[in-house]
Image (cartoon, rainbow, N blue to C red; front, side, top):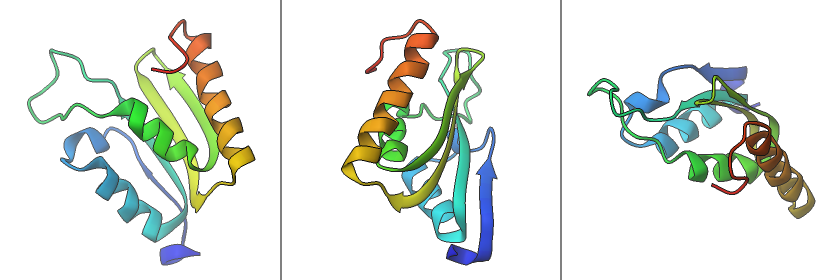
Length: 111
């Protein structure tokens, strides 16, 4: 198990860092399971928030062992995944799961 922890999670944190991928990689080195929420940027947000590349971060998680994806309150994307790369079939199922959740919230499946 990487870093000795079963899981690492961060809620309302990743939007405060300049490099969200470096942040995720750090979590991945420390735990076998990573959970993070991605908050969509709002124009009235605090200056301490960075706009997250949410579609790219969803794809990043979909390339791994995605365990759970859900949108809450229309703007909070909860990702739970294992850092190991996924095989082609799993990646396709992960992408389909993300698209279905977006459609469930009245959003375009691929954005």
